[in-house]
Amino acid sequence: MKELTFANPNLLYLLILIIPIIIWYILKNRDLNASIQISTLKGISSNYLTYKYFLRHLLFAIRIMALTLFLIALARPQSTLNWKNVSTEGIDIVLALDISGSMLAMDFKPDRLEASKDLAIQFISGRQTDRIGLVVFSGESFTQCPLTTDHKVVINLFRDVKSGMIEDGTAIGLGLANAVNRLKDSNAKSKVIILLTDGVNNRGSVAPLTAAELAQTFGIRVYTIGVGSMGTAPYPFNTVYGVQVQNIPVEIDEDVLTQIAEKTGGKYFRATNNEKLKMIYNEIDQLEKTKIDIREFTQKTEEYLKYVLFGLLLLAMELILRYTVLRQIP
Image (tube, rainbow, N blue to C red):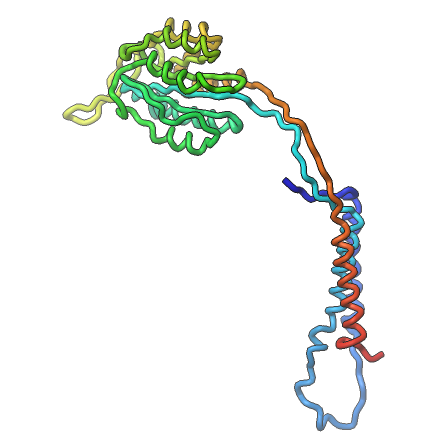
């Protein structure tokens, strides 16, 4: 990518001198009017203003433009073609999100699912150079978005996620296995799964710890997040009298989630409210920082010559006009 830089940028301050030159010209010509005494105005057309009257300041304007170009040339403009040293994240991340009915519990604001989506979107927005994918699960599991660097696509698909998209239940093992399948062929320096659930595995053909062994085999680190307040949580029920909120027990299999994280070199977190969940995402963001240094290459090309040539062209134009069509009688 080409950028315009200057070898002597401080010389550009000389452009300030153009301002007093313009002021001097205005003051000099403000009261400068030629006069001649004649006996009568008969025979002189009332429309005595010619094109020379309107172009009388053109010569000065051309000279100022030429001076400006010479001063810019003096600062030595250069076009720079470069690749800078950039530290980037060589990480592939798949978010495995539980969308079972219990994620509608209202111990988070507005509920567990929406809070998880909003904070995950913030997390994705901060990982600009990573490939990110999305897997959702409840009684079954499917890939909502494969690994991609187009984070706008991931975020849009994340916003479309809602409870009830697939059969209800909590198939943690199946969701984790699906996420592993998305990452197993990745050549990334680091492969990570963030698995978020609020329940106990009760569906699916793959046990959670079996899926954890698969992740370990492929060198995938799993961070598990248990979402839900301690004890009970308010949950909305549809009744003949409308939606009513009742407290239900919170059941999270923290033992299994901890074993999954430990087996794969990750970490287990418990989120009991929006702020705690935000802190967890921030901690994972800090833990997953694998730097890749890119070599810098720079090529500079001098660009001052075209400014000088254009300035000389303007001076030549001024001289031609001064001694031809815009010639003045002393």
